[in-house]
Length: 119
Image (cartoon, rainbow, N blue to C red; front, side):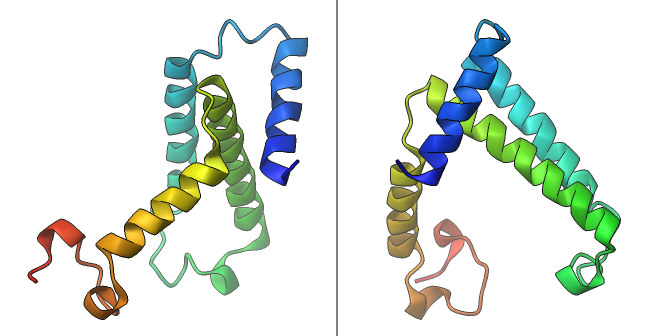
């Protein structure tokens, strides 16, 4: 069992033990995920790009960021479990799709979205 699946199983048991499955609908989980992503974003909101780099972040801020990232991951895992999505397979598939959309020769060194790129 891979690490994500093991964590997903542990999270499902955590929710079941507390009788939270009835609250963990895909809609509610997606909303909670969005809220946690917003809390993660809030940690960077008024920082310059330079201040957001690892070496510039105070350890307290880095700890808060780590906790918010964990919240995002846990809600994403729970949502994937409820929708029977294999996140590892989905991420690998998406990475392959992105490799086609963003070939190195056309994408290296720029951040232009593939649909706006002039061929």
